[in-house]
Length: 434
Image 1 (tube, rainbow, N blue to C red):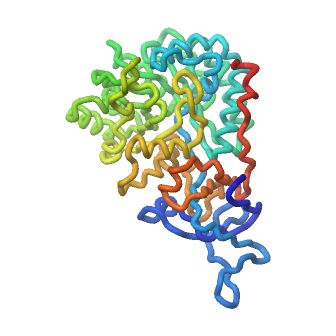
Image 2 (image 1 turned 90 degrees about the vertical axis):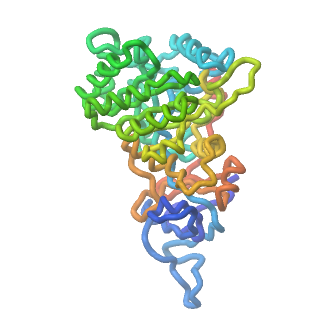
Image 3 (image 1 turned 90 degrees about the horizontal axis):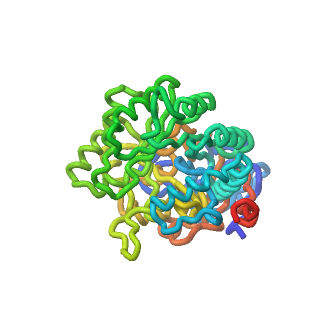
């Protein structure tokens, strides 16, 4: 049961705790009041009684003392894999390794009919919505003749979830399969462009990387698309495709948004090499998204050996260089990550622990809200007057309380009204994934 029951309609939430950056102020956490009317956050003071005390209720707007409860706008999850989600029962990773994940997913592609993908994708979106997420970008496996079918499901989900979750999609194609004049990629790029989606690829060291990137950007420029890469998802310090992507963006003068995800290997490079690459990333204006839970699961995994590093990118150094840094869910219950539920509070809690986002003056909360919105072009989440009253309210009064518990009793408001946060049962998927 939720820690508080809020009425629908207009109300003033008195004595809430909010991140200062989300109301246009400096500092960490601020105690304030939020008035909600007509589904939006409004300006104005709490109505006072003749004695000068806050009225508990007025004719129009009840006043509810929230006793310091933390409030966030609904979250942005900018890197997910909804087409892979929840296949673990039928396609588990045999050893937890990256190669085990690749091979298992590739074998399971044979099961990815449109009804199969639709059922799992809708299940995942219901989870994300219940947890308080409003915008999602998903990557879509596009080889093995999957692009037309899976992007067709995306269109259906965009229509079904309109007004609840703003859904974007990016194709996912290995860089060594991208050619300007041959292979599957020209047709995939056309599907992406016709649907208004994002052009995507996964990069790793190949002898002709620069040529493949130029062919990739040929389509991005021809169709005027934004792009999103999986980059250097490895603990091999010689894997530096991030450098080549940044150099190519600068050489081409490419102006659309470019996102690079994972960027793990930079953390195990010599520091001077990493500094060079970070400077290039900043100069090229790339957006970086870290996926800490999935990378902790996969990276530095060797049978019988304790992992020596955390698998994540250099978030602090990238931020210090002026790079827009975000965090996201990545995979959920598939061979790349056996766990997860598209819960951005879980992502924020785990990222804080894994990446040491605490004990700093940086407003890292933005990396789960405004930063990913900037990277993807979603409407920026904010608690400012005039913003939609799409809120996540937690029974915590500060960061240590927030991160100590999973906040499973949170309240989610959409257009100012509480939603039903009942999560779907995994049993719904038994017929297709058992």
